[in-house]
Length: 140
Image (cartoon, rainbow, N blue to C red; front, side, top):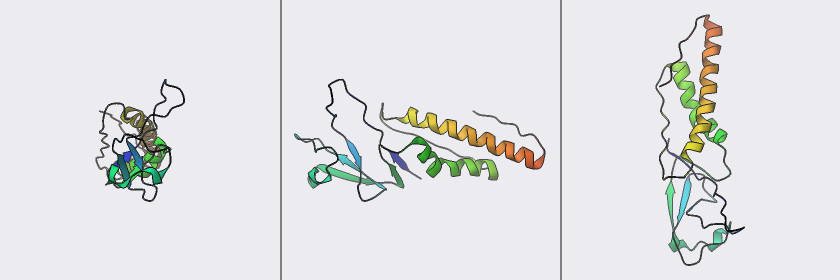
């Protein structure tokens, strides 16, 4: 799966003025992000009608998570199945993040690592109880 998360904007030191957005989620499709191209006048916050069609480009993904999404939602919807298959079927699993500096990769992955570690140990403990054997855990 290829998923995208749009992190919330950081607050600025220039008062209550919100910086212009470069990306937004589609109001009608959970799989689409919209790149807002630079214009002399930025669209008003949350006003879809003010985005001229000639100043946007859309991209489709398997899932798009907007500014209000949580890392736990992303984990539950995307990552938990990978962890489950690693623990119950012996498969390898990879979660890869890519993006520009300061786009929230470390923040998102920290939350995912905490949740994945919790679930990995829970699966191992459940298996140890049901089988009566100890499992070696190794993280690299």
